[in-house]
Image (cartoon, rainbow, N blue to C red; front, top):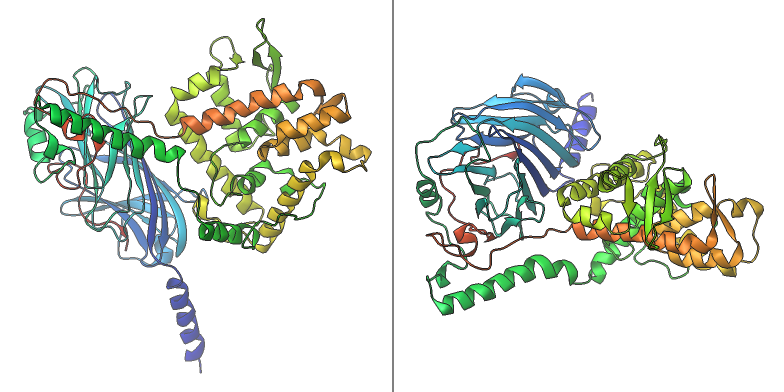
Length: 575
């Protein structure tokens, strides 16, 4: 009979393991190159683990490249212990919370324990020395960042690369191989390679970048010209515009222009004219958040601040009422109002009547969440040397600092998930941002947020007011900003009372509308700057390289080709 409990335990563990479907939902890789040619790499893997004991990345074809500074964290913030040399033959429990390098006959595998089955977000960081190669005529980086034959096909992959100077088609050329997608330069000088369809087993992501001399001083020297590298990389490649490429051919130029317009439509306009979320997707979203198939038109109302006043948790509900993240970032308007409440900011008008923010002396930032504090430092940097943030200054700054804006957006999402998880609102703490499922407690609080939104909508219709409620009007305005309703609510408050209390500051209600409109513009700037913006050459410089992506001037990637790369190989993922 003793065998029965053991068999039951084995059965339970087997059911648990097979309760998940293996998946790689997203890979986001940030590469920062230093002047000596070292690549600092941070990879974020959003995955579902359904088998195996560890996750590994293949790094082969290294030559004089060495790997150092390994670090791994998971969605809980746990920092894994670096063991140095990795022992593959251990159990799930023995590998949990640990990472290391496994030496193979062809290079290394970067390994860490998965800890448990289910959704996880792993962030791995490391350095690769001598990633940039010094050639006779140019410098270059030719590396495979995502290998083929992964344990599951990634649904989306994005690689960002920065260098000591801003990159553009004036000082670099770029080619991408192994996947279906695009490659280009952003306005702030970042190279971005991004897939536009799910990877197959044969897909990989290889990036070849040619740099003008003077950017790097790498000691890794190859006695060859760049043309030789490119010739090998182009073997087996096929760029979509190659068939139409004929030098000085007007028809080819016309076709190239049409192709460029098509790429621009794919990259730009789909962000503005994306199809509306399907009814089925909306139902799934509402079911995950509210436990209902649709948002009730009349959920009732309540005066109680949603989620106990936590604006990050409220923001997730507010931004997903359309079935997916609306990417309006209304929460930054709430951040600004809270800064006004705490004396971190004051709003004035300049001689021309334009609004501007002034920063308080030695402000207390203890009340701020992680993302709120990061946003504070963004606007502080945007204010420049005079320390005064003018009406259009943040827009200009964010347009030229897009990578910092995207980092803020990524950290904001992590912060939102952390707050929801800490309050017991999430079923799985490691789920992707768009796939968060609420517990029964979370669903009830989400409905409470809808009831409070209804209260704000009917603000002037609710005649009975209590003294303690009036003191909360500043908090009401902050939550109204999260729902994108602050301007409407401010107008209603102006009708009722001449003064509104924002924290310890009494504010003339007649100025609330100006304050809200000014604050809302910051969310619009974040939304615009967080979108990928690519720069494609409309004509071809003289030389042998041709047009578009095949010529190294951005555009579509080639699925084939890319031979001669460093740093990659075959395989990886869960095992």
